[in-house]
Length: 165
Length: 266
Ligand SMILES: Cc1cc2nc3c(=O)[nH]c(=O)nc-3n(C[C@H](O)[C@H](O)[C@H](O)COP(=O)(O)OP(=O)(O)OC[C@H]3O[C@@H](n4cnc5c(N)ncnc54)[C@H](O)[C@@H]3O)c2cc1C
Ligand code: FES
Ligand code: FES
Image 1: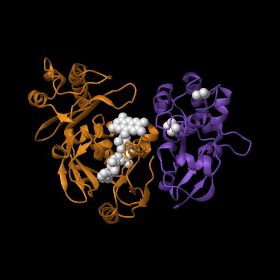
Image 2: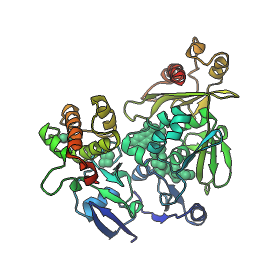
Image 3: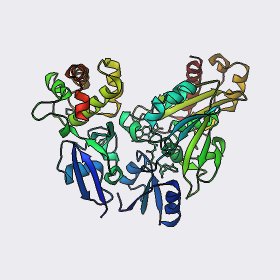
Image 4: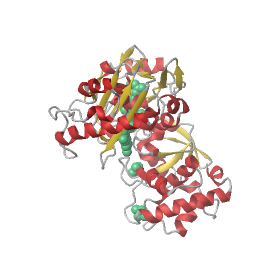
């Protein structure tokens, strides 16, 4: 089987994989990083979003072998030890989750939005940017609130974005 | 997904050789269409030839009076490129409407154009701006390139390398989204070029993207929404499905064309 190596949450990992292995499967089954979820497996829901070289990507629509040499951050790589990332903290604070299934993808997408659009996000911008993320139970109001607050706090935390990548 | 062999191409020549020598090969660009199709087992290539590690085929440049975009340029790169934004803002705007942010980080212009989905956005821009598709073998005018539903002029071992978009005097795009897939139910791209006017429609054609010559004629007098007052497109030959009848799409073409013209004037 062909070999792939990449840096996941700061750690260099290497494995032999079946070419069919999706990036998300590689995290969940090879690395046992099960924070990244599979909601739809058809590129619609965003539960599988991770950052590849600093950009949000749906890891269910990617072959692991295609990411040789990539730098990847999954939801497990956001917190600093036991201290939650400001975006995670904002989801907790603003009740941005209920069952939590969509949350890893929501949070990774949210951090990506802040990376691209800055710390002062209008509600409308957040809603537009959540185009590719589906939540089946919380409803979007609190998620949108959490992202707005988390974005501001990332600014205050100063460099939290960089630290996460 | 059926089993396949994964091949990583390091250059265009090697990719071409792999396409010529391997059994049942398929190019992989952003994978945002191909991988879902393989999961559904609608495609089952024996060999994947990955273009992602090839350097220098994602550049965006202004060459003379054309914006030239490398095949592997991601939708987000086209949307955010200052060169595209300054010279053909309608094209940058169109790229920013494709899918969602994560899809735009992976999906490429070459993949979208090669795929020629009847509801995709880029084909409308290519036809509307009179673009040229540049491949490893030749240059193909957009008018000759899009052949039908998911059909193009590409040969089996031919790779799109660049797409060259002539800068228009004015251009605009309006997309009426399918509420479920967010692809275009109807999308209209209008452009005023020094030599001609083009109106290209995606989403509605029974055999893919097409031009509306009656609208183009009417706009010659004045490139303005008013010039289209009273004009309609016949529903005959248009696509009709659960998302919208052919008559509904015919109506939307008129509406979208006017809105694209308004956008072009801004
Ligand atoms: C959730 C979602 C929403 C989407 N919404 C939209 C939308 O609103 N509008 C829209 O237009 N599209 C949309 N798309 C499709 C998206 O734009 C794809 O990125 C695009 O259709 C294919 O590009 P790709 O780079 O991902 O190609 P791939 O999936 O890698 O390849 C597609 C096909 O093109 C061939 N190919 C790739 N590159 C080349 C090349 N250089 N030369 C020759 N052949 C090549 C491949 O062999 C394959 O057959 C959406 C996709 C998803 C998953
Ligand atoms: S699991 Fe990847 S988008 Fe739903
Ligand atoms: S919190 Fe349950 S799906 Fe979003």
